[in-house]
Image (tube, rainbow, N blue to C red):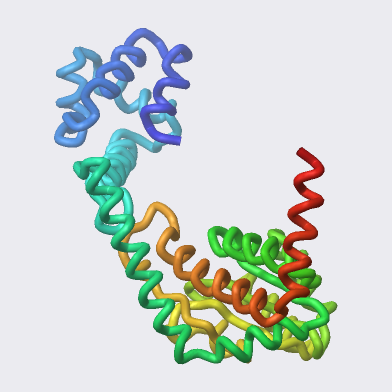
Amino acid sequence: MSITHIILLSRNKLPTSGRRIADWIIANPEEVLALTSQELATKIEVGQSSIVKFTQRLGYRGFSQFKRALIEEMSRKSAIQHAPLHANIETSDSTATIIQKLIKAKSEAIFQTSNALINSPFESVVNLVDQANRVQIVGMGGSALSGKDLAYKLLKLGVAVISEFDSHVQVGIARTLGPKDVQIALSFSGQTKEINAAAEAAKERGATVVALTAPTPSELRDLADFNLDTIADESQHRASSMSARTAQNVVTDALFISLVKLRGDSGQEMIQDIASHIKQLS
């Protein structure tokens, strides 16, 4: 809770001098930073002791501690105001510029990840998923959304796929896998504790672990039997992992289409059968 909110919540419980102090600080927070307690008291026309009692009522030891907290809060707000909205997108950018920058970042992620797939063990992964008894997909946050999208696609082909958002459930399911099962772990950083725990559990049970992760050293890359690189510039300030999800979707969509091709008529029939049943619901 911000200091302003704390002051507002406390205002009605304060004496008259306390309310005057509260109103003045809310109206002039930046000016408070340059004043001593005596100077502030003079400006508001209250006693210095009233300033000290006011800050103590808010939970501070005195004016000095209150002032330090206010300085830290103002610094945080200033940093947020001057930070980019996302990556190189600035608050001053027009809608057209924002869209162009997003397209450029996403296009770069698509291009780089697609090129990486060409020289990866991608075909081996396709065959493993095709022949697996069960496929577990694990991910957290934005990666979980990419994983759930892949799960829906694999279900259309009749693949026995398991996809749960809860990290504890993911580890529990991983403990039930066996040598004929495949776990697909999505983590751009490769350092997500929950995902690595699930991957380690799957490895212990003899399952094959496939990681969709950035091409940088990580615990997940070391755990995985196969690594499919997802390449995106996520080093800058970001509001969401948009480029990383775009890169992940390149891999997951390529995996789905490759399985459709591999399964031939049976895959197409399964997709059409599911589509026809869904149409009956509308």
